[in-house]
Length: 419
Image (cartoon, rainbow, N blue to C red; front, side, top):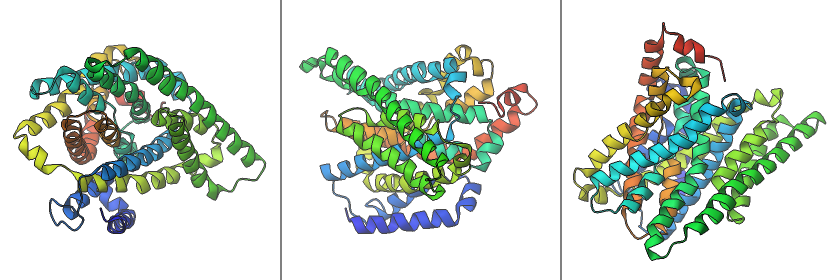
């Protein structure tokens, strides 16, 4: 993997995306899709300008890139969300995150069990767990910007952002539960999963991270009031907090993903009105710098030969996962979510925009080192590519359709400008 060549093309793409950002938005192409496409074109599959050798090193690079990307996306999401979103919508958000994740896990695992008879039930549960979380990286490109603000009500956008942020971290214990179940035949200890993974690495991690984030936010607020803070330092401060949470809780062998969101959410609570004016630019910068590299690297690493060897199965997997993983789950939960009860158009658009992206890549690489079947990388990478392409191309058209279809009903008006 030629590092300088990769850095050159990533930098060039970021420059071009920045220069033609509005034009790109107008033609309904997302930055992840552009980066992925360029990686495929320059990689072994097409021009072969950048050669990739299948080795543990390249997967380690992808894992680290995913961690940085998720950290920046989660911090940007936390800055974007209203501080009172959970307090005002606790029932809806709790049901959506907890039961939505469990249903998506079961439905996705069922698709794999149906289409891949060579895999056992626990292997299918692992694949389903890996692609369960909706991705804040891809989601941010779909639900932010002027077009999304024009066509989607604030409540719907904030709900999707919150869900994508939270379930990235909550997928961690689910993925490891599937790993423990898979290893149970070899003496895996589920009690160890409960204490180590659930209680220590996830729940305690979230509590401690919230405290760290709150402390960083308190420091920011006090230095701002004292006149010590330069507005130009806000971007570096936010990035540093995200990286502090990521690296610190990784060193503690806790869940770094849930740490960044919990800490970022607490940090954002103390951002003052003056800093709020700068948040949109901060979010765009944080997301663009980290989103383009990880999808470009993914484009270089795609296992085309392995997909081809599966025949028509990958096509069926993509179609059924995109249609059956999330839509049925949200339709089942609709009567139990007060903010979206009887709001069928909103539930349908939410059911469609649950992209699978960097979080799935991260968990796939994480699981790859712990199990001995190749599908743990081949299948999630396939689904991520399909989601990036399909959700990227359908974002603006379906947002317009939602806007036009819900026009004249009180559904959209009830959600507009409410958090």
